[in-house]
Length: 129
Image (cartoon, rainbow, N blue to C red; front, side, top):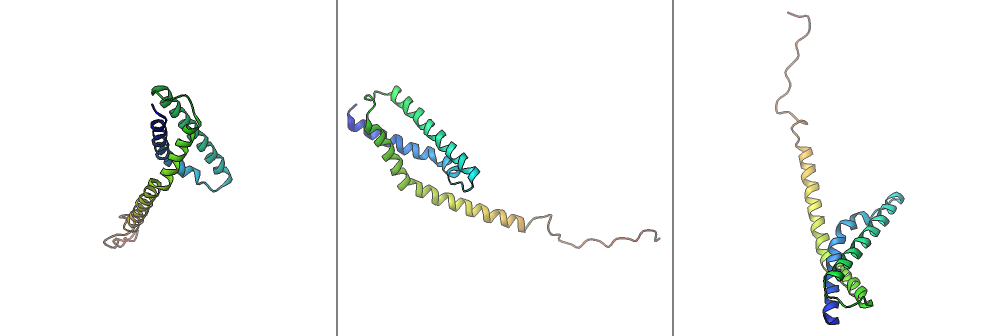
């Protein structure tokens, strides 16, 4: 393979890595100190996963020996994903979240257990005939 084709393959691999990073992104935006450790671990797991997938791609295809432009291609592919498709995915994720939140709140307001259609019957006094 020529260097241009390998670089293009690394761009696509980085773009696919961006898609793979979406589930890890939710964990990454943690705020508390305890969650920051978990976020760091999730980032390390993602890097190990992406490195393992790169190794599989490298061994399965006819790539040139490891070159620095492989790293630049993957990084630029991740950057392209972040600046293009990630915003679209985030937009639709926010829409789905808002609609589901509204639906759940409506379900809580109109719960069958919360209100009755008819008032309860008066209770009979005990001991009376």
